Length: 311
Image (cartoon, rainbow, N blue to C red):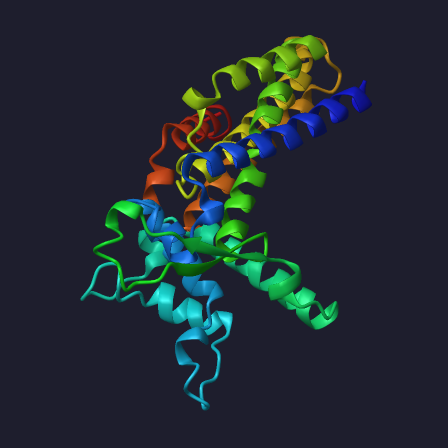
């Protein structure tokens, strides 16, 4: 039974990742765009989030090719200068972008990219730019209708690259990899709700697939915060549902169970863990009060206070 679920999950993950990649590519033909054209295609807050990712993986070496005394900045220096002392997003004010914006995913992705690049270059002696990127020369042909106006201008040739070694593709592939778990998690939730039924799991995955364009925008707007939060939300829901389904028989037979004290301590520990996790989340986001004002946190706090602190 477990092998069937793992096989279905693996197949769905690979297929959904390929689907997101093709939908994204077919929408704007990123393969034939230059790096700056890809970045220009990101609109509104998408470009802002991608900017923080780019400045953390870029040591500004490209902007200082003529300066022999230039020393590349390490990640800590970039983090302090570009994130903790951001003078561009709300210029002329200097703000802590990590506290103002939810850019923790970009920081983690930048760390992942720099770590991957360092390991491949220093430990595996890999030519990172050649082996992990595919570059093409694309000729920009001038339209015949504009030939008279551009009589003296030759056709321009531009260079475009793709592959996981390209920062833009590493960014979108990472997000697609995270969202590849979405249909799997929905299927596993249906599996536990449907009394451990494989048919329920398959049906939930099929229903999500048929309504994917109404359920997710990851293939159209990759950097949005929902593309990071939705898979984590489903992970949490799966954990809660699995936890309560396994705990439910013990709750029903609470008064007939010889280990009722252990169950009581177990439930109390569950509420404490969720309260502590929510407070920790607020602290990691440098005092995000919106998390502490959520109905989710208040419900756990009220139940714990009412049943355990007021007895």
